Length: 373
Image (cartoon, rainbow, N blue to C red):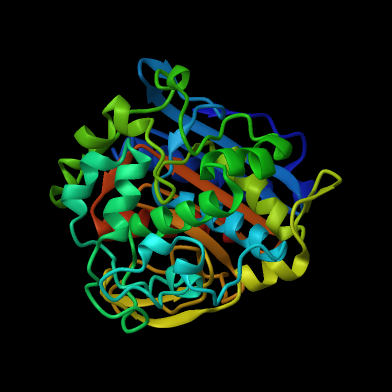
């Protein structure tokens, strides 16, 4: 295990025993084959308290600088670009998608609002997804495909998590309004000024040899790694799922949000923008996940009691409706809690079945809460 030396975890409010326990949890999950490569970073009170890396990637030891594909953790980054444009008055939450992207208004989708897209109420969660996969490397083709979709349910009628169409819609709206691709806008307004040197929404070719290859330990997604390990797919711009980052970089992004939109002396967003982004927008049944969820505008929210037999809350027992973050396809997670002043990120390279993965996330998050001094 590679451990970045932290001068004084206690100064960040974590106990020495708790930090040791976090390392034990990560090592035990590695030994049990839950991943071949992973990272775990914890910040508290603005201080880096834990920064761990374990395993091998492409024949080299994983370090805190190794970029991982973080799947739907991307959605928080894409969403925050839209929030910035709302703050600037260039977009409006209850405006129609067609106000910015007229071609989207086909087949009953004409009245879809940005709010409905944020809350996965747009009515196009996954139809034709298999046919869409071949279009991912080609922005124009992919967005034309999405514009031409027929809704599976009327917009606003049913909450069903949108695996990738969330990103195509918001990404194209950003492009239409700013004239920039979503990755360029994100880089210029957040990634570069925050100093996230190991984060890209579109992975550069030179970084392919550094990012871990995916594997799966579950029957229902056994074919996914072969697809995502294709260089052309790894380098595609898919705003809902193509972010590559490190656990350390993810926690810097979330620390900026915890700070009310400010980091290292620079303001990125106004506090009221972050408050709006992390406020409950929907609580109820999700037809994609087949369970009750809490969503804000670009973030999952914590505090839900687990159903009988569930492993527990993925953000841990200390989470509340004020805890916000996002999860990535049974591999990665990143979340923040404003009351505990916590920012946490876990990256991994192995897709597990749903229950074992939720148990993995819960075990890590519980150990973080237990480490608070």
